[in-house]
Image (cartoon, rainbow over all chains, first blue to last red; front, side, top):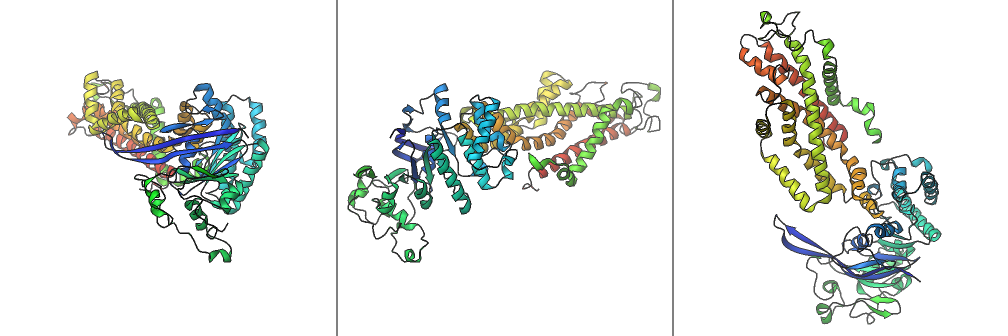
Length: 331
Length: 278
């Protein structure tokens, strides 16, 4: 399969300064060396707690912010070196759906104006625009009568479908979905997820799906990357992750999800005690070290690299392979 | 803008309605000044000087025998005209700088904000006085002077709003599908900062009128025989004991107009931003 996006050890640090003379206080390492590849037609799920850097990765992939170090390739082109026509060509081939549907649409523009604007930028004719918009809103099940309304007159689900329509009109190849269902009711979530899966199949779309919701990511993803404090700790096929996670953090995350079955409730939990340490002063060595019940001396001293422990299963843990989480994870 | 601007919502706000009615009368007077005023504003008749109000001269006459009523009526045009032009100029400067500073940030923002703070730190009327003294007394120079000292509040508010808006998902979405900077500012940011601009404009109009009149009173604005309210007031101050009507009536006209704009602005603020009930 063709690789469509390559994220190559990308880093993004935020400098926190104070006062007129920009006294450097500290640095936040929001994304600290993240690498993964996304293949055409697949859904790559990126999971992690809030503050793990998922959204910063999304914004980097969309070139909404510049990396501090290294770069990202889209279809072989360095997106941060592209200029002018080349950049516009990249921009029309990828699009993004945001978390907050109410804030994703210009409050002073009608739904129609928002949806058709990308087409205007790329010089489509009036008649073409009309046909494409009609076709697109049908695909996302958005009623025609909503086109002349303003965003505040729509429900959250309708707003999100309008955002998806806008992301879809240019027929992109790659879409970044940043928590597209987190702000919605459960019933609406399922509807939006199904629309996303339908249009993916129809247009052979590639997704980068970012979420903290473990059931959602399992439902939509082919492969999953788990992020913790700005680093990827584990990448594997979705079934592999859920059946046999190899990183203690992944196992902790999976065990912490509340269960619906009465049987599950009594299971012993792997408790990752405490909160994630601050990104300002990350612990040396493995970033999970202070919370990890399996930590050893080496974990405190050396940063674990992401390595292939099993075929297509990458883990950044010194003890990967030695540990068995089968009694703890219950997915 | 949807339902926000329907007539019912506007008229339900009593403050706004009161301001609207006051300003409507002021506007009618300004437009039909020729029909309302019984005499030309500069028609002198020394034999009729300093007459008390009477049917022929409802507001009396001044030291040259001019009809104070007619002068006040014609003065409405100057007050409204200068006020509108000043607000137009200052909002153009302030909004443009605020949008650019807020959107691009960095060095440009630093410079704009430094100048803004500087303007903020000086008493506006004293600054305007200095500028008019430098340029020479005339109505156009008054416009320049007042606009030059009062654009800063527009810049500040628009900059703050722009900074908040530029990181909103709908702006990021626009950047993501390839919208250029100029289009982002004009299509996405400007329409969303419009309501505070409108409120600020109505609230700075009376300020502009007051400043114009003050400079006129000091002899730095409109020159005789112009019927500028400030000028009439200053001419009347020498006769305040014998002929108080010369000063009283333009004073009342000024208060009436300024009150109208203040009520309108406060009402608009309440309507456009319901959270901001003061």
